[in-house]
Image (tube, rainbow, N blue to C red):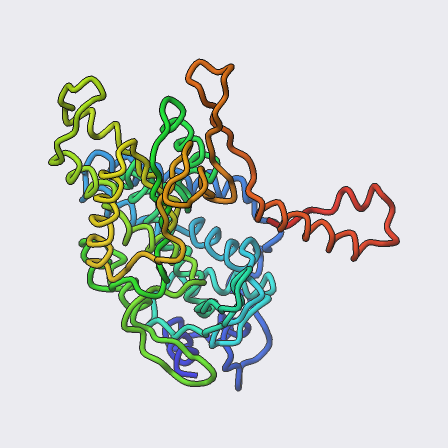
Length: 419
C-alpha cells in the first residue's frame, strides 16, 4: 500500500506502523513508539484541561478579529501532543462509528495502535484517501442515505483539524444558528418560544434537500478564506468515493459520515440570517397602529432559527414569510443547494392556513398555540414531543423489553434508551 510505504519512509522505522497500516509485510512484532507510556495510564482530565486553553485563545482572537494571532494558535494546536491524544481518543473510542472501517480496513485499534496513530499525526499530513460509501435506510421511508466513511488516519486528522476550526467559527456563526457544538435542540426550541410567545406568527418550516451531498466546493472554500487547514479540507472534499469497488470522483458535497462534515455544512450555510435581515430592512413595514417600522423593529420582528440543515422563519405578516422563502431559495442556489418541496410548508401557529393545521413540528417537538379564554392574550403556547418522536421512543422501549424478557425489573429499568 502506497500510504504505508510513505509512512515508513517518513519516520525511518517500520516499528511505529506495525499495527496501524494494512501493509505489515516484512515488519517484525508490534511495538509502540513510547514503550513506557500506556494508554490506560493517561490522565484524560489533564489532557482536556490543557487542550481547552488553546481553543479558548482561538475563540477570543477570532471574536476580536485578530486573524494573525488566531492562525498562530491554530498551528500550535495542530502540533500539540495533547490535542493529538484527544483526537485519536474521539475517533477510536468515543465516536459511534469507531468500529466502521474505511477503504483501509482499519478498525478496533488496540492501545498500542492508538499511540502509534498519535505519533503518525505528528508528521506532515499525507494525501487524503477516498471514502468508502455505505448506504443506510432513512427512518420512515424506503429511501437510502449515502454515508462516506474516511480512513482511520483521515478521521483522526479531521478530529485534530476540527479542534482548531470549531472555536474560530463559534465566534463567527450567527446568533440563531444551533446544532453541532452551538447549543442543543432545546436551545433552538426556546428561541422559537421566545419569538411566538407574545404574538401568533406565520411559519416557514423548511428543509434543505440533500444538504451534505450538494454543497458547492468553491463556495465553501471561499467562505473559509485563508485558513491553515484550507489545503487539507480541499483534499478531503476532492478525495472521491469507493462505491461497490468502483471509484467515483466527488465534484460536490461533503461526505456525510466524516468527523468534520457537520462543521463544513454549517460553514456553508453561514450567512443565511444576515442575507434575510438585509432584505427585510429594505421592505416597508408598519406597526398595527400605522406607524412605520424602524430598521431595528424590522430585524426584531423576523426570526430565523436554524439547527444544522433544518430551519424555520417566523413573522406575523404572510407576505414577509413568502418573500423570505424566495430570498432563501436564491441564496441557497449560490451554495449549490435548494429547498425540498415535500418537507417545506407554510403554517400559522394559531390559525389554520390553506388547509394546514395550526402549529408545526421541529426537532422532534410539536409547537402550537391554542385559543384559551382564561389567558390574557387569548391563547396559550404549548410545546410537547411530536407524535413521531413518541412512537419512535415507544418502539425502542418495546425492543428493550423484548431483549430482556427474563431480566429482573431493576436491570430492565437501568437499560439505556439510545437516542
